[in-house]
Image 1 (cartoon, rainbow, N blue to C red):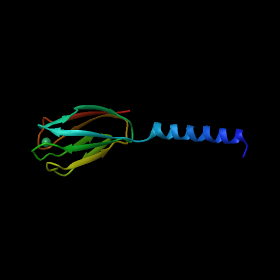
Image 2: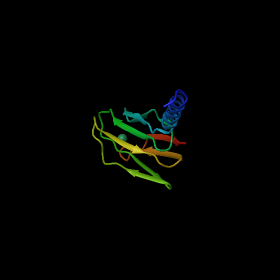
Image 3: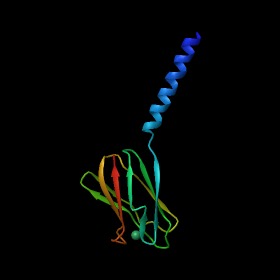
Length: 109
Ligand SMILES: [Cu+2]
């Protein structure tokens, strides 16, 4: 293999890795504490997952009721968590059936 070929191969690999990294889905952590989502607003990318951890002393639940996306979890005890993957762009509100004032606003780009 010539030096030029090796260099080209190296550059190609770097570009592929960069491209992969740009589209890699992320998992972002949201905490439920004192009957609130923290943070209460978040911007994510299509394909990302929200890991919603119940760090509270109360049982919670999470649901999304949007025309383009619906999600409904079971009740989550303190110390447990729920993962929601957003595969559609748009604006979504995540609520808790048990505590109607709890609201997390999610913008998916
Ligand atoms: Cu709750």
